[in-house]
Image (cartoon, rainbow, N blue to C red; front, side, top):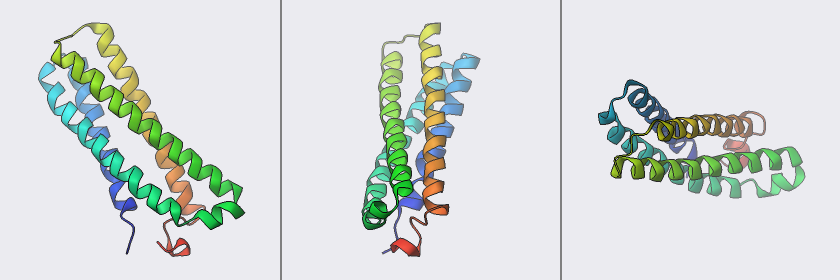
Length: 149
């Protein structure tokens, strides 16, 4: 069976980018009506991030023998897992913080700055995760026929 990880990984990336643009535009323009759609996109990014992590773990099991023989591969896998986990936790934290500010109707400027700051960090984390994912595929052949992908 073909792995679905390469398919799934694009969903959290796309949904997070849509979240980021929607929420940032809403905050900058002062349009509070953009917050709820942004939260929905962030929720979808979290949901598909969980799916990506689970399918990625299944994919990582296929390369265990090669990892022992190649410390560079081990480092790339560890970094990919680390940054994907950090991204997932940041998204979940950002979602609950953003949900809290909406629920309590908190529109203070510094809360919006905090949200934008962490949203930018999430954007950086997803880029780093994607970098290591690409490295795993193009440098080490993970997810290709070499590893039964």
